[in-house]
Image 1 (tube, rainbow, N blue to C red):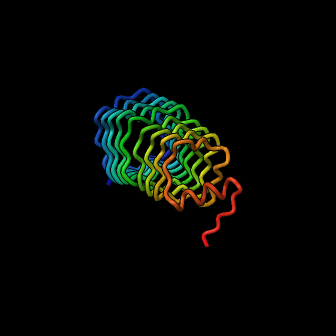
Image 2 (image 1 turned 60 degrees about the horizontal axis):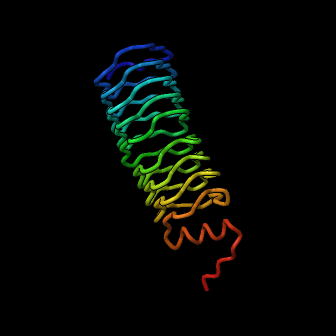
Image 3 (image 1 turned 135 degrees about the vertical axis):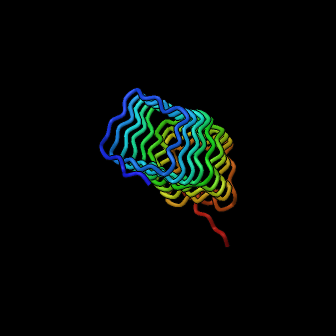
Length: 199
């Protein structure tokens, strides 16, 4: 295990295909770094900034990106398997196509993000800010969206069956064509002011 890297700045470096293993970075800045096809397993990035980076076709397993700031960064064809993205912020990022398998994405901010057509089943997105995001045709089956912000989000054809929607205000979300199970339909009806009588 290598020592943690703290407070370092990496600019215009070529980390193509780099094997990051379980490296630890804290409060580091990655600017215009090419991480295409990089690999990590159990790595930890805490309070780091990724500005204009390329993580295209990279693969990350059980790695953590906690409280990170992603700006204009590309995840094209990346794989995130069981990763923690807690509290991270994504601005002007390319997030599709991307393969996501489980993980904890609590409190992420992805305002206006294009997430249409992705499979995000079983993902913990509680308290996430998805305002104005495009989730059209996205699968969120069994995901936890409790307390998430979906104001202005496009949910046309989105699969929300089995998703946890408690505490979600759906009054300003675009829901036409969204797929819901009975529990989800009740939440939607109640958010619109209906009184649901199950008796």
